[in-house]
Image 1 (cartoon, protein in one colour):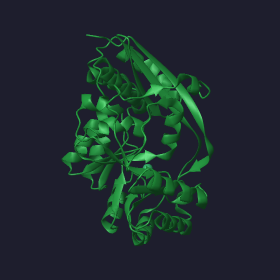
Image 2 (image 1 turned 30 degrees about the horizontal axis):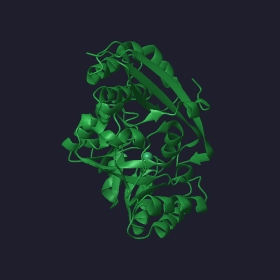
Image 3 (image 1 turned 120 degrees about the horizontal axis):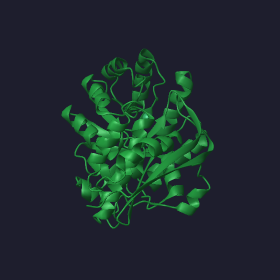
Image 4 (image 1 turned 90 degrees about the vertical axis):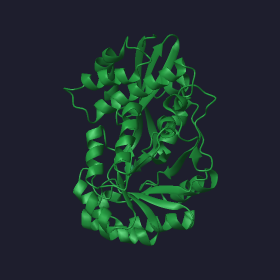
Length: 365
Ligand SMILES: [Mg+2]
C-alpha cells in the first residue's frame, strides 16, 4: 500500500481591496494555510482559511501523526490527528489544522485512484445548489447593488445573503434599509437571506426578524450568538423564517447539542473548520438524525465534492471573499452556472492545483 511520503505546509495572506465588515468583525486580509501531501508520485492539496499559527501546529503535531501512514486509510490518519491534539483542545485552530490535512489526504487518495473526489466519496447529486454570500456592511450602496446583480444575473443565483446587525446591532435602521435595497435589486423571485453573526440580543432579534419578514427574508443566520442555544431556540419559535447556525462548530458533540436543543432549522457546517471532510460527512449524518438538512459554510472549493456526496444537503454558501482568494491561488476553481456548482468529473481529486508562482507574492510561511 502507498504510504504518505511527505507533508508540506505553507501560508498565504491576501489583503482585501478595502476593510470588510459583518455585524461583529472587521478584517483586512484573508489567510489561507495550504497543506500538500505526496505518495507514490501523486500530490494531494488541502487548505483552511485560518491563521499562520495553524502551519506551526501542522508542522509540529500533525505531520508526525500522518507521515508514513497508509495513503488509502484517510480515516485512520484522521483518528491519529484527532488523538494527537488532545492536550491542545479540539475546537479552534486544532480542528482547522486537521481540516487542511484531512482535505489534502482525501484529495491524495482520489488522485492515487485516478478518480474525482466526488466519485470516491459517492455521488448523491451532479450539481450542488448555491447561494450568493457577501453583502458586507462595509459595502457602499452601489457596491451592494453590483454584487447582488452579478449573483442573480451573471451567476444565476436564486438565493442571496447579506450581512446585518451592523456595529453589534446598533444600526437597525440601516440594516432594514439594506434589506429593502437588496429586495429591490433581486426582485420577488429570488430568496433573500440575512446573517447577523451573533450581533443581536434575543428580543431585539425577534423584533427585527418580523421587520425582515416583511421583505420576504427566509433565512436568519446567527440572530444571536451561536453559543446561546436557548436564545437561538427562542428566536426560532418567534419568527417565521428559518433560524440557522453552526459555522463555529468543530466537533460532533457541538453539532449534536445544537440539533438536540432545537436551536436551528438548518444546520451549517464548515469543512475547513470542523476537522475536514471526514468529520463534515459525519456532521451531515448527525443533522439527518434530527430531521435536519445541512448547508455548507463558505470554502466552496473544498465543499463542492463532499456536498455532492451527502443526502441531506440544502445548499452551499458561495462566499465572495473565498471566490476572490481561491481564484488568486488555485487553478481549477469552478464557475457558478445556473446558481450551482458542478464538480468537474474530468479532473481527478478535488480538481484544484496551486498556482505556485502567482501565490508566492502572498506567502508568509
Ligand atoms: Mg455566517
